[in-house]
Figure 1 (cartoon, rainbow, N blue to C red):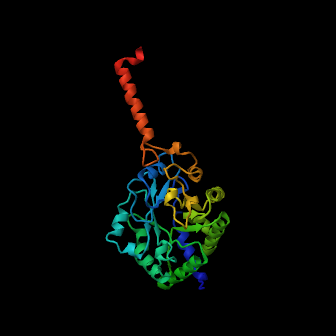
Figure 2 (cartoon, rainbow, N blue to C red):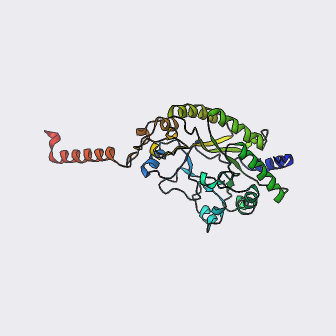
Figure 3 (cartoon, rainbow, N blue to C red):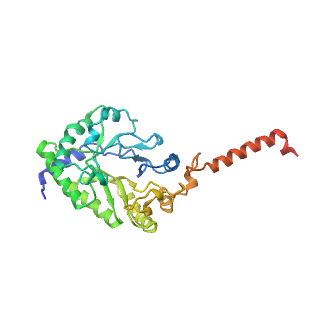
Length: 324
């Protein structure tokens, strides 16, 4: 393992030299918006009564069915994303509430497993040349360092990335405004990995730099175990000032869970209602957040019944039935 002690001291100057990022989020709770969701599912999770204040979808472009009241945080997933035509014009055209950019999703992980699989050297070069300049653009984007897997491999990648940054730019390295984090496992593991990241970036000064947890869950655990893990984790994270937000990795119906996640992490039942886990995460039942169209894409039964009731009441008034 390579270690650059001087680099860490210099890195901190660039992490804490600007206003703490993510301070404008209305709540810590967010949404990792995975594909294959019905519009009704999205409306349920992001309704005006939902406590979820922000979301990301592993993409630089927002999800059409999510309103602007839920802050969108774009992600530059890989080197290929940076090569897309007009990528920064696309980002600069986002609503003003989008002030933060996530970079390079799990570069230490293989592409077939959802990672971007980028060498630390290539990532550092692209980060400095193609991402850092946009901190001082007209949008003044606040950017995160690449988010690695919550593992020793991820930590080693960050160390090599940091060293590569200072080999390219000995004075500035790779400046960042906040840190993004992934962790899959129990509460003790979440707390331990959070401590590991803080130690990596220097725990004394790191309290001034926000951490955004964009993926967490207890894969392959049953729903009861996930609820227990979520309860412990939310209580812990809500009490940490340096944790700006967190997103549960399970915003999908049980039938759409895969073998690796298991359906115990799912926030939604197969009919689109909240699971017990989903109720715990949002802090209410399905009916508390349901809007017109219902939570089940196959039915609008509640709304339909309401509309028929209104029609019959109007007819009754017109015919004078209520005066009999």
